Structures are given as C-alpha cells and as structure tokens.
Length: 65
Image 1 (cartoon, rainbow, N blue to C red):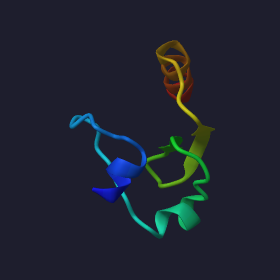
Image 2: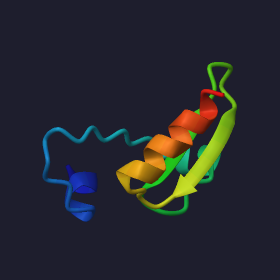
Image 3: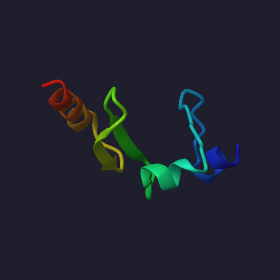
Image 4: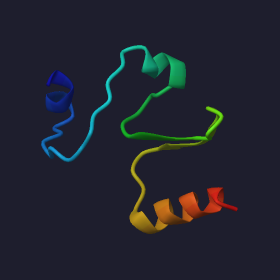
C-alpha cells in the first residue's frame, strides 16, 4: 500500500511487484524501469522511463528478429 501511495498508483489494473532486494539486483534507479529478460534469464534491454506505444512496439518487434 505504501508503494502505491508513494508513486500515486491508483489504477487497480496496474500490477505492482515490490521486492526490496530487486533494486540492487537489477540496478533499478528510476521509476519506471523496463527490463526485457530473455527466456534464459539475461537482461537483453533496459529502458529507464516510460515509452510511447509506437516506440515500445518497435522495441519489442526488434527482439523478435
């Protein structure tokens, strides 16, 4: 609850995963931080900040090739 309040996350459709150790493990320094992880568990892309839909779609499509 405190995390949702801190970042003003009021939309119930937004899932929040909070793990106090994750910030250190994944080196998360800003919100949002988008990590794209391969099936083998390797980070293949890190994006700090939100992306507009066209940029997000292009980025995801680039992983498919």
